[in-house]
Length: 201
Image (tube, rainbow, N blue to C red; front, side, top):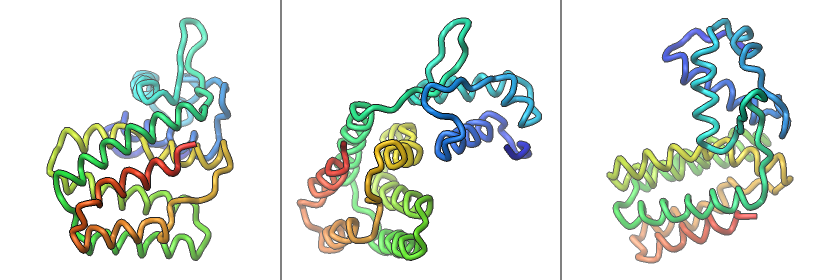
C-alpha cells in the first residue's frame, strides 16, 4: 500500500481499503488485520478502525468480538439487493430532473475509450460517472447522498470478479438512455430502471 499523505485520513484509508477489495488483495473470508493496515499506511489504528466500520455499514466487511474484521463473501442475493435499491433511486432521480445530455455523451465517450483499450476500471468508473450525472441532476441532495453511500464502484468490480460477469458498463448499453433523455422521452425513468435491473444476477 502507498503511504497516506492527504486528509482526512479516514477517507484516504477507506479508499485504499476499497482498492484492496477491488483488486482482490483480500479474498472473501480473509481477515483484515487492523494493526497491519495501520503500519502499512503509517497511521494509528483509530482511523483504520473508523474506515472499517464504514465498510461494514456497506456490508463489505463483517466483524465479530475477538475475531476482528473479515471480508464478507459476496452472494448473488447481495448484488441483487444492491441493484434493486440502485434502480429505485435512479428511477426517482430521473423523474425529478433531466441530466445534461452533453455530459452523458461525454461519459459515453469515456466508456467507448475504456472499452477500446480493454480497461475494466476505466469502464466501471465511466459507467458510474454516467449514472451519477443522472442522480445529481435530480437536485435532491439526500437522494444523491444515499446513492453515493451504496459504494457502487466496488460492488460493480466485485460482481465482475466474483461471478465472472460480462463487462456491462459499456457505451452500447448506455446510448438508448442518452437518446431518451435527449428527446425528453417520458419513458426514460422506466428505461433507466430496466437498464439497471437487467444486470442483477
